[in-house]
Length: 88
Image (cartoon, rainbow, N blue to C red; front, side, top):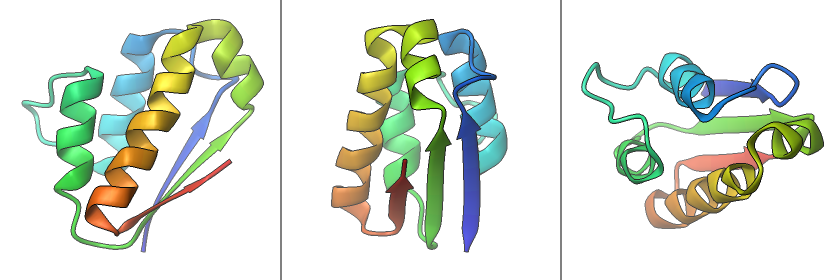
């Protein structure tokens, strides 16, 4: 199982969020670093993958509504592909 840990204390910008996701999840070089591209890459996952977000309140403080969009995108992708689990 692949595991991805996102710590809201470390995520201070959307750019850093997308860099961390790409690194942790092994996204391709051409990853577009936006929420549409995130959804596309997540739904291409074909192995059990656990994404854990800790310190979400701090992430929301740092990113505003983008933190909620992140959760929505991951949840939608998990529903679509079936290999992703989101833990918060």
